Image (cartoon, rainbow, N blue to C red; front, side):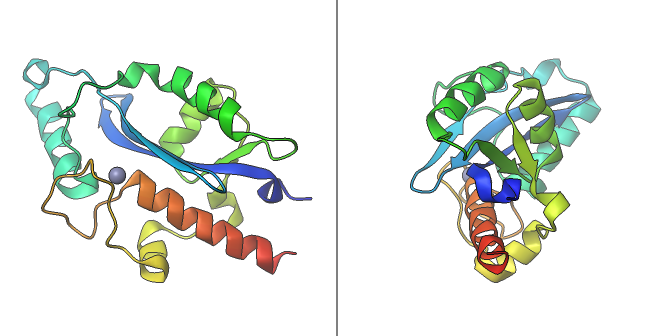
Length: 175
Ligand SMILES: [Zn+2]
């Protein structure tokens, strides 16, 4: 039995790479029946960053995901990501279905740190986001993104839902 048949949830995170750090801004966990998306606050004071780091952040907001650096609401810190993932893993795993699955190198590093068993969908040929958008629709965003949506932006929830559909197809083809 492939680990792909024992996935309990698909996870994705979008956020900000600043220097060598990755600050999660939104996290989605998509199980069989439920899907949860949470916001995080990097708690970075932009004014204290170098000009170059500020440019990188603006680029990521404008062209990568459409998420502002800081959320409007008071939410948990990005530093809590390992703790939050561990808690969600306990909720989502059941029986033999004990793998999270993702296609996201930055999130993979965090999952390893959290010691959560996971499958890297890239190793099983999961396609890039633009192909998933083409196959499953590219116009859905969760409510956390800026309002003037660009179709090229990535939303963790859309990505997790698309990968979940891709995984279902994979399982049907390998039954
Ligand atoms: Zn989103």
